[in-house]
Length: 133
Image (cartoon, rainbow, N blue to C red; front, top):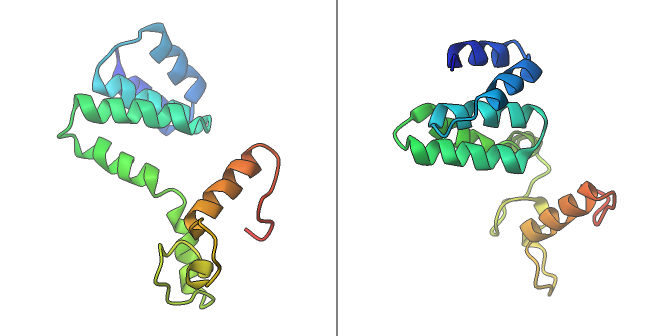
């Protein structure tokens, strides 16, 4: 399989052709899973992209590119929170530091991070638990 060609197709955003080539010759090596994760990420199939990226990392644990992409994958949303941190609206939090309500003194059993996660899940299904985020 010509992985260089597939990488070039991905680099020029021709994900459809790259996916066709990958699917036409499925392989269980790290580069195949890595490239397929890129294709899946372009389709915003995050769970499947993550699965294939993890497989690539497991098959080639010393590959720094795969490791870096895995770290970046988990930090996708961080760029938004970094902008929020610089805006001056954020308090110095004692909690998990994921939003400005970490210091709240409510008596609920959910952390702020739990609530944000629940809100995100609701939004994925068309609802909205917390309309301000």
